[in-house]
Length: 357
Image 1 (cartoon, rainbow, N blue to C red):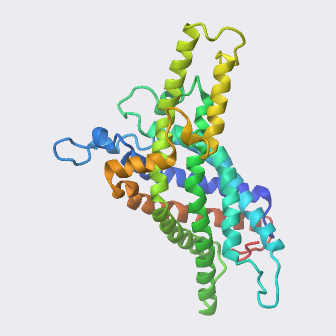
Image 2 (tube, rainbow, N blue to C red; image 1 turned 90 degrees about the vertical axis):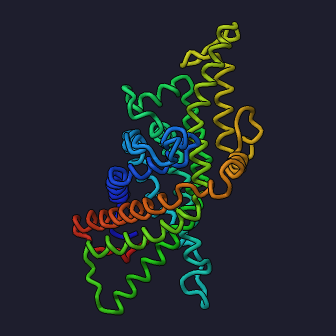
Image 3 (cartoon, rainbow, N blue to C red; image 1 turned 45 degrees about the vertical axis):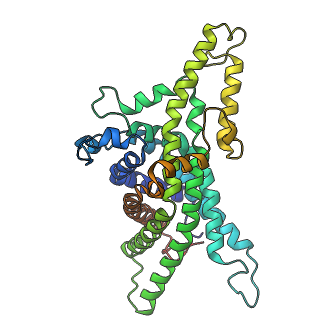
C-alpha cells in the first residue's frame, strides 16, 4: 500500500481505538449487563420489571484494561489486514474474463480480515475477560473494579485466555461479513461522488465516507452475529468464577498434602500447573472443550440460553449492540482512515483514501 509505513498503520489504528474506547464504552457496558444471566436479579426492579438506576452506574468500569490492550491489538489487526490484503491481491491470478483477479475481491477481504482477527484476539482476550467481569462489579464497591477482577485470576492467570475461542468465534464471522461490505460500500460511494463531480479528495471527505461505510456494514454484521456475542459474554463472565473455583480446589489439594514436591512460580504444585495449562489449551480448541469436566461448550451454553429465555434470549442486546457498533465502527475506521492519510501527507506523500493496496 503506497504512502503508508507500518508505523503509520500502528499509530492510526491506536488513535482510532483510543477514540472509540472512550466514547462508546458505556454502551458496551450496558450490552454486557443486558446479556448477563444475573441481569434480572441485579439490574431490574422485582415488582415492575423495569431497569434499576444501578444499571447505569459505573459505565466505565474496566475501561483501563481495554485501552492498554486495544492499542497493540488494533495496531496488530490493521497491520496484518493491510499487508495480508495486499499480499492476497498480488497473488490473485488475473485472466481475460476476470481482469481484476480470478478470486472475487470480497473473498480476499474476508480472508485478510479473518487472519488479522485471529492475531488481534490473542492479544485482546485477557482484556476482554477482565473488562466484562469488571463491568459486572457493583458500582458501590470501594475496591477498583479492575483490581477486584484481577484478584480472582491471581492464582490462575492462564484462565484469562479461556475466552479466546469464544472471542474469535464472534469476531471472525463479524469481520468476515463487515469488511467486504465496508470495502464495497466505500468503493460505491466514492464512485458515485466521482461521477457526480463532487469528489474533493480532502481528509474530511475520506473520513466521512469511510465512517458511513464502516458504520453501515458494522451494524448489519453486529445484528447477524448477536447470538454468538451472547454466548461469548456468558463464557467470559464465567471465567472469573471458574478461576476462583480452581484456585480454591488447588488450595484444598495443598492442604491435603498433594502439593509435595516441585512448585511453580505461582506457588502451585507442578501437577496443578499442568492441569491449568491443559485447561488453557482446551479453551483454545472448541473440539476439546465440550468434554471438560465442570465447563460447558459454546453449543451447550447456547442451548441453555434458548431453553431459559427462548430464541429471543440469543438476540438479547442485539439492538443496542447494533447501535454502538454502527457508532464505534464508523468512528473507528473513519479515524483510522483519516489518520493514515494524514500521517502519509505529513511526510509529503500525496495519497488519498482510494489507494487501498
